[in-house]
Image (tube, rainbow over all chains, first blue to last red):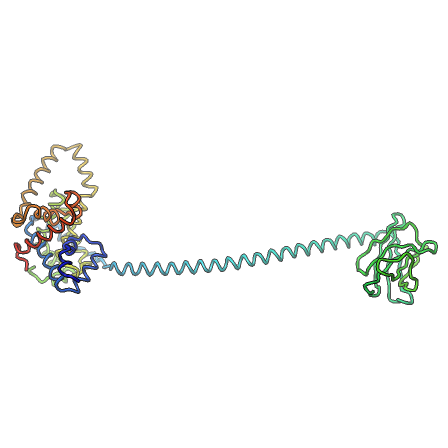
Length: 258
Length: 179
């Protein structure tokens, strides 16, 4: 550093007059500690100012000294706070705060995404449950209407029992003589190849009349209507049904009582 | 300084009132001379002087010897208090009341004070400086102006203010026999 130029800049005079910023003051203190020539110059400037100010002295009134000494009785201790320390602490505190908030932000983001994922799962499950409920309701109303038929005294209950070819087979026909409705419920029928289907027949005066084809199901099936019938029978036919029953495939048969 | 500055500071820090008494005897008048030139009224100058010594006494722990001499610290502290006083509400208010109620009295009193300040203002050593340097030194060291305030108020370039101050300090150093 050019010490002459530094001195000539007048920065030391400004320092002594207290005109520098805290940062500039720190710089001057550093340079003065490093270069003895600067330190000597600084002391000379200070002494010159002191001498000058002394020459400008004005004596205050004598009683003022007592006032000063009296008011200075209770010593108030002021802890020195180093500016640099303060800024270091402030910076450290800021960084810690920033880290803390970043952690909070991350934490809340993580919680938020997991919550929204959970919410999506719950909504999906809710939909499934609603669907299931719908299905159950449908089945329930179906069962309700089935029961209405089964319980209705207007329906005659015709038990169809297994023939020699299918002794375990069993089915029930519900027939309403006044509305002509026919329902079929299967208790047991054999398993068919996919190209075959069962067909229900009504025997009227010894003649078979087609009452519709069906596959095995647990539900109560609505079949074709008939005004009269002496008996009902089920045969195995090609898929789609036949006009004439194949009697050798007769599975169950039941006569209407009376 | 008659006593060693370090001893004095140690005594002040220990709360030794005789050190404060010594400080007042040796620097009170010098500080008061600056205060009266800045606030220009005796009653206010007395308040500032008292405040200044109270502050020096209470804040001596904040003084850092490696940053400068004790007198420099005391002078800057005192000068700031005096400048604060001129800016304080008390003075603004007093000036307002003066204007309304006791215009004549105040003018008399102020003129007296200002005459007194003008009289005390004579410092032989300054007369040996060129007038433009004397002006700068007076305003910076005795009247509490900053370099930029002098530059702005009197239309002198800041660089010129600095140069004149440097030259004046060189001359004063010899005149005041500073080693």
